[in-house]
Figure (tube, rainbow, N blue to C red):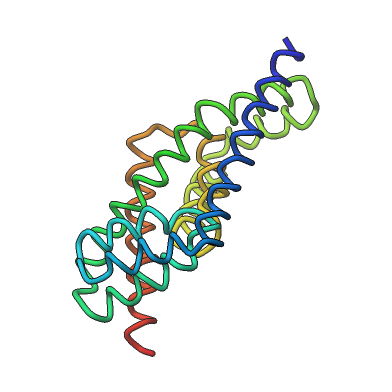
Length: 185
């Protein structure tokens, strides 16, 4: 069983590396910037597309700039509504991958370790779970990599409906903050 689990973890690791490579190519070739700048005049579509890219550590910088520019030129509220919807889509893709694959494989890996018992003991405390939800939400709202916050939520085995709620609300708040900062500059 452990040998099979190690193969699955290796497969997940390869997928993550491949995703990082694609993101780096998009940023290095400036393809991402061209996509984002070509849609920024279209408030709703531009906000939605920039929101999708607002979720990854490798694409958050150009997406943040684009969302700020859209918010300055258009309605901050609409930018945040549609940007958060795009970010939710990006987060859901990451969440499904993390929750269904990586978190299960990591749980299997530490299953028989002493650390596992300590982690299971922490999950019993409501304060720990709520703190984890809130910390994950703050990570989703910030320019920090959403992958970190999503991993926390995936490891807790949060239901998809609650993930959608947390992701949308905190991405909305993060985009509003980006828009307010952009408007003040």
